[in-house]
Length: 494
Ligand SMILES: [Zn+2]
Image (cartoon, rainbow, N blue to C red; front, side):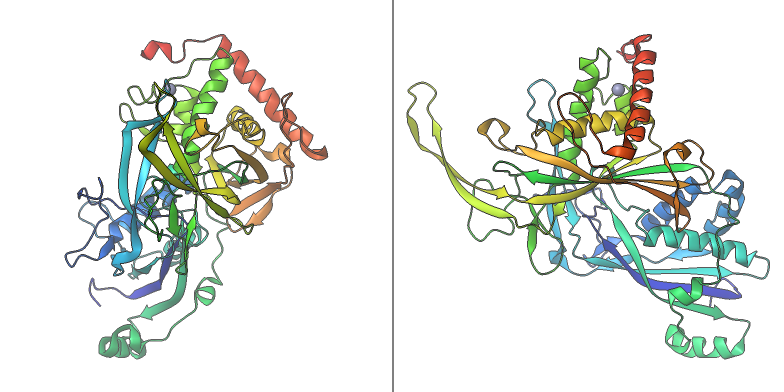
């Protein structure tokens, strides 16, 4: 049983991904700039330390500071081992990965920037990683308190609040844990210890996770005040649309074909990577601020100033860098049908106006369909929500093209907010004014069924939600007023 422990709880299940996962190995190949991590036998490896890191940093984020000593007690510190062991997780299916491109936008030419192009190997969301975690308790431990904190982390993991791997704000690493069984071992009891020594976990009784957690309540825990705004939206295709893929799933060869991924094992589907939405969103938010006479930086130069509203919300890579607070989850097809069509193009000689004999190319593009996505903003300021809703207004008016060939009559889409959901943790008074929150695990949630009808004149919403927009509008104007007094927010850094 090792480590001289009295009790051990073992949780077994799997981690299922909603979007692709990238765990970098720090190595590259002919195919990609960044290979997925592998073990010595070449299997895809999600290290226990990566899961532990994400698990612990999430607990640190949501638990009050007074728990830092207990968290060190549980997860270890210098010379003191962790009570919690996350096993390395291995995926043996070599065909589970594809190469995913990343693209930056050049602010001057408005085209994809070559230097910002990088790619990486990701595991497709159809594949699950096995999960095993154990917690050891000794006589001296406050077992109830430790169990409560571990369960809080597991619940958050199960509910999709813990993301894994890289590029989280660009749509990757969204996942949820499924716990299939729990073993609760009491080594002070010979009836438990002897079968365990003989047959390992096969020798001991299994609990369901529901049974294991049924007596635990989180109400006594002191949680930090956190707000999370989820915006669920749809993207409707209005014109031929394509985000270029690598054609891995096409039977014929095309010069251009839609990016696809295995969302389930049956067949690959077209999707829109979060990164393809995040770039245009950020860029349009910059434009809105610039139009209003507010400075914000161009993040493609020097990685962002780190001070302006945009850097603060979307993140920046200059200096020590900071991950943004806005997450753009990948979009997958809704139930509505996606239609594809083949196109032949002829390149025209710019001097003679005639067709170039060898410059024909073909493309397979989407002609109609609908994708569903989610944007999450952590601890949003009201003026930040107001800014994001203004980008959504442009998206609603089909004034924000996305994807390939925007100047070829491609890429016109319409974005429609389906609903917005405020979630809050801890004692938060700030968003009380919006309405009554209902319990959702340790979180409290409040749904805004925003019937969003943007038009050129402004935001238009239904009845009782006018209040919400009025609030945002007021905060937005306050923000503008405060900024106009100090237009140099970014300049001092240049
Ligand atoms: Zn900036």
